[in-house]
Image 1 (spheres, protein in one colour):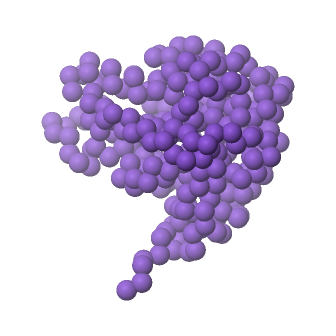
Image 2: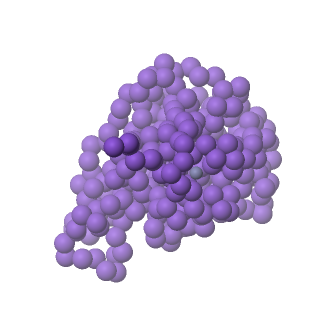
Length: 274
Ligand SMILES: [Zn+2]
């Protein structure tokens, strides 16, 4: 029996899969690959209040060279490569930490690129049961080339980057607080929310999405309030142009922001008595 064809995670077609660079091979020209190994943190909170220990793996090579084989060649060389091209002009000064004014179009291009990297980066963990972004969000990106409406995305200027963990994904099973069941079933423990933090050159990116869009929309960084001044929201976009670079993040800031939502939902679950 031949192996069943894999389905492309975007178009759903059983086509030839290609290796996709999560962050784009073109970034090589602008961001030196210096790490010969990197940490890759995948945090899953299986039951509110009972976080699993973060699954930190040391992987070979620089995280910016990471590839996943989940996208068909048509999507990869078509609309995904168009998203890379559309974002290049705005991304290069962010990678290099150079002055730039991010108008609404630039915010949109960068936010769309971060959404793409977040969606494909989810498969770096090679654990399909922990994919928190629903198919409808990937279909939305393919059809509209914008982040889904319920996502929230921030960027920061992080020039030094001694923090060894350059990619942190956290996923959680968030259940509807108004309809909390007595027993948490397996299905309820599937992740429905994710936060992803990564850095490329001097750019720090943070994306939050949830099956309940009011959660990312209302996220106010209460467990890391300095993020309110250090990070700039770019999705939803703002009609006001943003000057760049903003104040620099320290290693502590980057680490704290990456785990801020995890801390909040753990505390919340404990207060609710889970
Ligand atoms: Zn495809």
